[in-house]
Image (cartoon, rainbow, N blue to C red; front, top):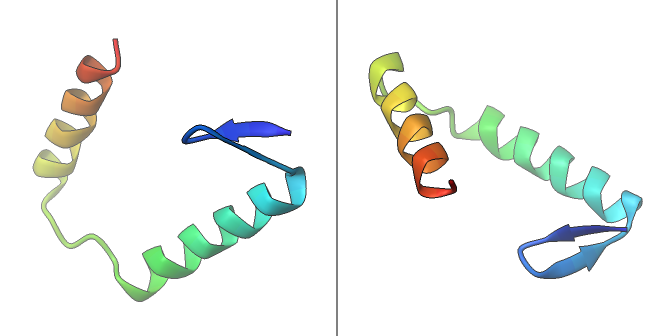
Length: 49
């Protein structure tokens, strides 16, 4: 069991979510420039600390 956004998920559910994320990423790739993606990751990391 893992916690994800306040819900407990089994390992099977986790695998399904990972596969869904991969499919969505493949269907709808992020076309923003690398510098913008990096800036967003840094912002999220700073907000989570």
